[in-house]
Image 1 (cartoon, rainbow, N blue to C red):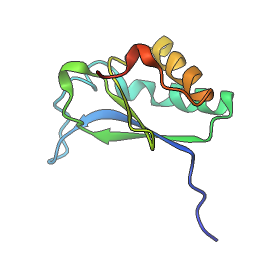
Image 2 (image 1 turned 30 degrees about the horizontal axis):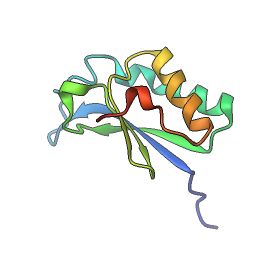
Image 3 (image 1 turned 135 degrees about the vertical axis):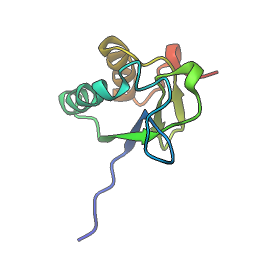
Image 4 (image 1 turned 30 degrees about the vertical axis):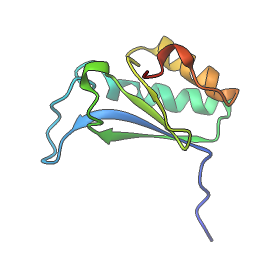
Length: 103
C-alpha cells in the first residue's frame, strides 16, 4: 500500500549544521518550540499538510525561516504563535501569507 503524500510540506528551520550542532538564529528564536503549534493548527484547520524540522536553510538574518512546499513559499521571522496562525490561515485558503514572504 503506497504512502499518502500530503498536499503541503511545512519545513521549519531548526538551525542544524552538517555535524549536527545547531548554530544559526532560527533555533535561538524558538523555531523548534513552534512545531507542536504548527501541528495543532494543521489538525484544527484540517489542512492536508505535514510539518518537519530541517537543517539550516542559510537565511539566518531573516530567521526563523519556514518553507512551504511544493509552492516554494519562503517565510521569514516566523517566531510566534500569531505568525504561525497567519501563515496557516492563508494556507487553509491555498494562498501565500504575503506579509511574511521572503522578498
